[in-house]
Length: 171
Picture (cartoon, rainbow, N blue to C red):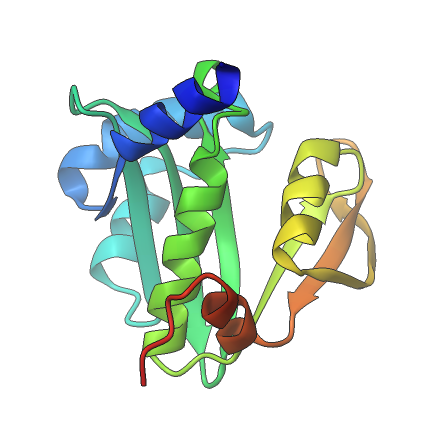
């Protein structure tokens, strides 16, 4: 059935550390998914100059970049900077795979909590984050400058408990 196909497809997707060679494909997704996209220079800077940044790409078995995600690690907190999946690959569990990797890496580098902002109207993302255990902590009014939409601030207060539930925490 559809679920089997989705699981099989997810098994063929690799999550790799983003590098410069991924930037063109990442920018193409960024421009389709966001009304105020990051520039190439921003991604280059994040990869090369920001010691707190971690970025990952989801790669198909054909080597195509399907999505990406990033986080900043600050003390014991991980702040998701962006997460996006190419429109034709959305609703296939790729964002969840990326978020899982961010959570694993963040935890192993000392983060105990994770936070992110999401558009109030982005129901698929809100649903995903809530299913992982993120809770709404507040609203940033008119956070998005393109249309003055509010951002929903979400926190996952215990990364270890989430990873433990998935069998990812070992010592």
